[in-house]
Image (cartoon, rainbow, N blue to C red; front, side, top):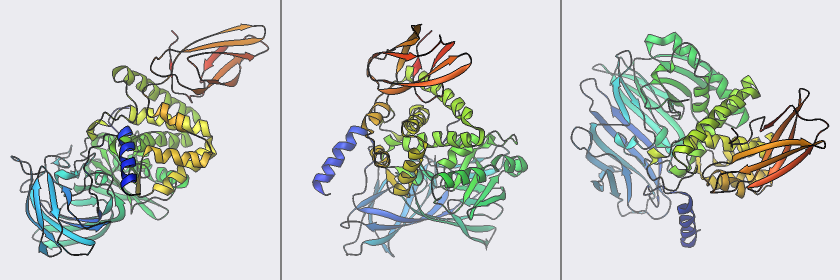
Length: 532
């Protein structure tokens, strides 16, 4: 997503204790019920904003069969849902519906794979945005991130439990429908209604499932390794939208070639009503309405959202506090894509802009990337989880070298594709591939607030360049390699020193007095230069 701005009891106790160190994700998880597949049947109308839903939930009980819960916002005033029936198979299920939770007690038989149905209706306050487009056309757009699916879809509304998705949308027949998955049916039902069905077999988190229902203009932009890439835009800005989103095929190919297979049935790029600059819905990305200008200015945004298809959608964070595995990856991989197209200067330019945002943000809110104090998933997004986390990947790449870095990325994705991971999982993969102990690197950059604040000076005497560096921040002494660019007679050489103390002095032999000395000339280190 892009915001609009630039092994049993002991094992469980051990895991629980460790997770508390790095996370305060308070979502109550089902202990045994694992959702395999949702079928969301929805009826939409122009008569009112009331939606009618029938959701089938196929569940596999991984251990004993026992009670489990689904999220669904209850009716309160004008908004929320009312349940008329819950079925287990074809028979009424035992359930309660309180505090926005459907608590279901399975019947007393041994079958571990069971299908439930929830029949309900109501007006969603959030999650499904029922509004008009900028051109005044009525529209329905799913906008679930981070946990707004519960406003309109009974589900496990947390990324830990991912499932296959099917949408069966009944709506007035003059609307076009796009949704998560591949279109498998479009049928006129009579009486001015049309049924459109999309199915996505790959497991998807509820934060990134969506529908778009309005009057669209759509086109096939191309196919990348048999994956259809399309644009869905408002008819009023049809040609501009097709032009702006056309780069998506090029971006998709880059990430498949660099990272690994794409997980989803298609890649649709949709102009939409969304609270975000872009929302990385799996295979059906939503971009804010004014992303369409015809000026082809959203390539970076498109790269960010497509990168999410690998990181955040397929390999998903297992706890909200580790959302940098989604947003930081998408931020840096959008830069990597742009570097591949426009060269290293583009990487440097983007990272220098990000570094300024990181420094400005830290003055207001000094906190680490993984911040255990955050309990509400709406608060996990920040400059830390986007720009600073992207910078960490930039430093990791430089530390390991391009070949090892990319090998580690491909290995991580292969291992956690269509699954979930934590920061420790990513670190362990990168350690295994590189043969390096990365504990200190992750501790100081991910779990420690801030960055080095450096005051430095240089002098020249006796064919030696003498450099003194002081770390001014008090809370932590960072260890890092520092590149020093030395320019003599127009020629620049780069020397690397290892900074491990709060005060450090280095000498570099040179045959003449430098014309200039620059720290980190190639933009590989996150730091603040405190020199005036």
